[in-house]
Image (cartoon, rainbow, N blue to C red):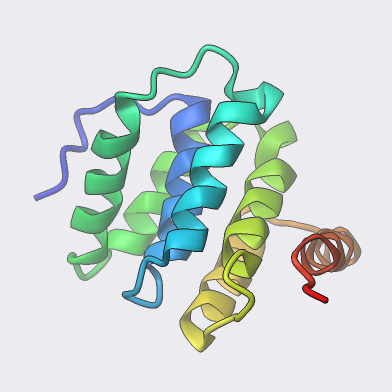
Length: 140
């Protein structure tokens, strides 16, 4: 059962979205974990983030994924914790994690679509974010 008593910070919400995309295809790849770790360690939005919270947030996401309405609950927690001005940031981080391993699985695409809907990401902004993620993760 998910520990919904854990108060989620805005940073936790961003981490939760990245973990959710990684776990959406039931195969968390090393490239995705490296991308999450890199984001948390290097991006200004994660300044001062307590890395010990990563495992707790990951476990919460996994627990919610096992529940029938867990995804709805996750989005509710994320919307509650995340200021609207960071909704596009959450989507950009989710896109980067999805693109990290060079493939986009159907489950990842469906979850990205759901994130766009749940966080009310403008279609044009979403396309730009997706294009940027694709450009950053191309290989030679």
